[in-house]
Amino acid sequence: MQQTIGGMTNSPHSRGDNRQPLHTSVDAIVVGAGFGGLYALHCLRRMGFSAIAFEAGDGVGGTWYWNRYPGARCDVESLQYSYSFSEELDQEWTWSEKYAPQSEILAYANHVADRFDLRRDIRFETRVTEATFDEPATRWIVETDRGDRVTARFCLMAVGCLSAANKPPFDGMADFRGPIYHTGEWPKEGVDFTGLRVGVIGTGSSAIQSIPLIAEQAKALTVFQRTPNYSVPAYNAPLDPEHVHKVKADYPALRAKARSRPTGFYFPFNTGSALAATPEERRRQYEECWKRGGLPFLGAYGDLLFDKQANDTIAEFAREKIRSIVKDPKTAELLCPENVFGCKRLCVDTSYFETYNKPHVTLVDVSKTPIERFTPDGIVVAGTLYRLDAAVCATGFAAMTGAYDKMRIAGRGGLTLAEKWRAGPRTYLGMASAGFPNLFMITGPGSPSVLASMIQAIEQHVDWMVDLMAHMRDVGARTFEPKVEDEDQWVAHVNEVSQVSLRSTCSSWYVGANVPGRPRVFMPYIGGFPVYVQKCNEVMDSGYDGFIFDGADRATNAPPEVRLTRRWHVPLDMDVISPAMLAAKRVPVV
Ligand code: FAD
Ligand code: NAP
Image (tube, rainbow, N blue to C red; front, side, top):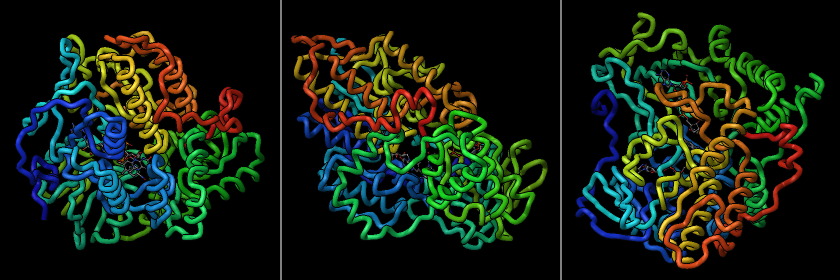
């Protein structure tokens, strides 16, 4: 049995090495060694910058290092949820399943770290606690919980959008006799629930993936649900070698198609209107797309996330599916969401709803009567004690800004990022924030990030950022930062675009509503990945319009040399994302 500390199982990702504190200076510090940090290190090196990365975990992989819960796997097909910067890497790595499991994605991250010799510049088991901009020296001073103090011209935050676990402080947690796990900090050695009475709090993607597998082991499983979620079957399966061979024969073509899609990954979709179809046509189309499964189900029609009436049709179809699977009508109704379909991140499952047909699985509604407290013996809801031997918090993350909140980041005049972002994050292009010179945020708030296939979003950001750094070296500039007015306009634009989508209407983590006390602001950029990439390209081509450079000895506003970013200069797929389609609100997003 695991030890519990402060009510939550102590993460076994504990310190093993005994290294001396680092006191040195480099061109760039990278915080985080997930897919963002790894690619940043690779590009910095390629462009001749010295760099050190700090990573809180004892290995690479980020999300895939921490989220080892049963059933964890990607929901963007593996052939696309992978790096695209190296054709050799694309050719030599072979995914085993349509949606690879966590262990395989982690193995891939480790392979990348070894293949590109990245490990030697990463300090593991080290959490960055402070980053302070030293104005006279125009350098960042970065400090860690291991006593490191490293200065750098640039700081690249690769801290992740979904990396700060949300741990609701339920009363009595410390008294609970069993272990309490969080899906996002799962023990490395795994957990055996055989013969135990297990409680799972939450019904988001992590819960929906883990519940069927926990139910296979547990003696009894109780799920505490605050809001039901829509979920589409994954139809996961081993990848057909023929299909893999075909993709590999022309991988660049698939990557190019993916880049020109609103989501940064490719799947066939229909830009027509759900409301223009007859009920029979709609049903046929929904059945057809349901059979394909996964996130592409949302591509059934182009207006589903823009028109409530259109959305009602797909929502009702999904509810009918739930009712057809779950045998107990009361449980089925509890599992039927009422909110906009796709408003919260759509879930992708294997036998999730079927699991509620098992006699030892119970669903407890905590929407009106929240979890009261833990006791030594279990969880109390509405005066009833649910007896448990172990509990799992599948309660998600303080998304987008949570990892930033955990550090003290002080920019010009000592202003901290937390102070600046008190009413919501403010960035230009989701990459940088005025008052914090030479600080980059990979997939930061205000960029497509979590609304795109994230490895693509990461690569586009890193390419653009490292090109900007190379440009500064070309012109001899010491600092860059966004102009306040351009940042203000971008923040306003991000907000305005979000209003067009039904996604802004529900209490999701996209708006910070899952964690009490956070400002309600739609954080990712919802205007579509290619539109965003085009904007970034234009900014670069114009000589970094919207940015101020300081200390340059040559003109800074001439068009810069486009190096890594060249591959993002792809034509938009105008069939899908033309201005006319945008105006008509017929752009499928997932
Ligand atoms: P992360 O992988 O989160 O890595 C950030 C790293 O920074 C972490 O290792 C963390 O320890 C470290 N760190 C943070 N703060 C500090 C600090 N102060 N000091 C030192 N280190 C620090 N996206 C998709 O596109 N498709 C999917 O199928 C998909 N599935 C997902 C499944 C799960 C369970 C989760 C949680 C997310 C999923 N995502 C998916 C999103 C996923 O987070 C990204 O795809 C991607 O892995 C993010 O990489 P990253 O490097 O930006 O961040
Ligand atoms: P999540 O979607 O935020 O779900 C958290 C769940 O916990 C929700 O059901 C939430 O209810 C519930 N919850 C939170 N606080 C609670 C409380 N105090 N009492 C009761 N219930 C509470 O988090 P997640 O499932 O970890 O997923 C986060 C994101 O990570 C996903 O949306 C996705 O982007 C990514 N992810 C992807 C996959 C994949 O399939 N590849 C898997 C896992 C995660 P409310 O809804 O009422 O807030």
